[in-house]
Length: 299
View (cartoon, rainbow, N blue to C red):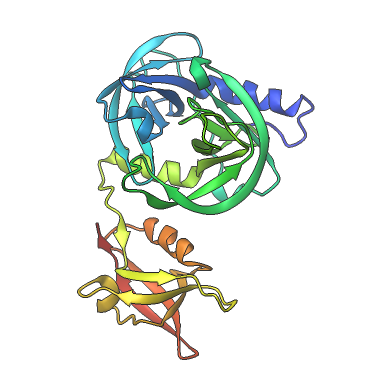
């Protein structure tokens, strides 16, 4: 990564560092971008919707070399997939992934990808928001609530799966969504999957672990009285929440020590755990703070 005080033009400096780790991915239904995650083992991360259910894809490296990549697996809920290429077949440069907690609103955001079949295209903007809860996933018919980084860096079709990088040339997110005004162009609102989520899901895919989503078994809403948390409006029968003693009206304020400000945040935090894990749920009932240990279910 670059030093904080690198004197080179910042966007150019970031592009110089990150571009060697960005690839063009062509699948049967279209194309997108990818990021070299582990050069030694030959693993590349991209969006699941870029893969489109294919078992193999064509991967083009910055050198122009074309190789066939095997799709190891994908997570439709978080729109992340892993592609493997033979590390002895082509020279690869792994990107550096920054911890999500280092991302700040207002910081430089550089997007690199292959929009409109133009590989190694660089655009820049800022991080507009972090912890943005939005509907995502690779299946539009079955969207999931996901945590995103919002940016105004121009992101167009074909940028999907490419990196969003910080001033030091570290990957902070994977470009995955754009908001449009009805056409195919960007209107200044783009979203990227945070780096922590990318690494967590990619590792699970490589390790052959289940990508099943954890769940509590409640329906809830964000309080409207100025307090923070997630207010339970329904507890489904025979679910982890019911077994843990949670009740309608309880206001969940933290999950395993992580403060919960809204129902969306609760949904996201649950997804960071695996089914079968026991989590500590702190909640408020009749003005009293209580704690329940809940074993998460899977769906």
